[in-house]
Image (cartoon, rainbow, N blue to C red; front, top):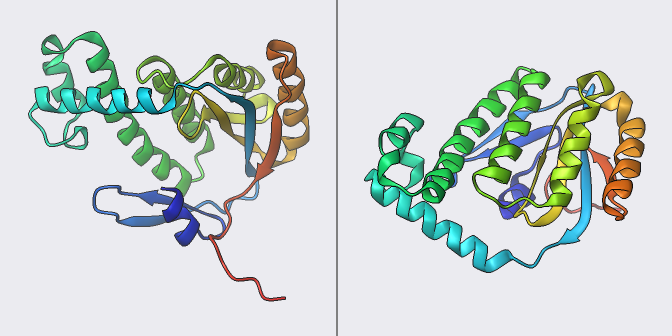
Length: 215
């Protein structure tokens, strides 16, 4: 995914990527009233490779029980009908993957329509699933998302979720452009009070991919 966006990124667009067909679609995000806030928790829990391999194996086990090549070929109804055949962990892993695919498609629709409350709710739902079903979040990431949710839409935050591989790293929030400074200060202060760690926070908008800049 990183390589795709590095090569194919375009200013004021998000990239919707089909990882099976490698089909890409640029989704316009040119509303100046919103921005993205990146909050680096500045922690990294060393659980990585072993946990990622375990989750892949769990997802493959779920697909086998469902009788599909991959969880991409399943849907929530099929998963629920086979729930009794799975242990609880395998079921939750599959529920996350199947749900996340649906959430991604719906988020792209919401972005096209500049329906920011809907996009924000999908971000919160995504984080909850990553935290509870896929179990790749951590206390620090959860703290950031909780702080963002406490600020709420009235304070300028539409939604927030962890991003990347998990077990630390960054969260990303969809916010009102005019509230960047106030939100950054609130999250930085509250996160430090909760964790004793200084977060690194900056705002951004979708930018172009790698390019040659001529002076």
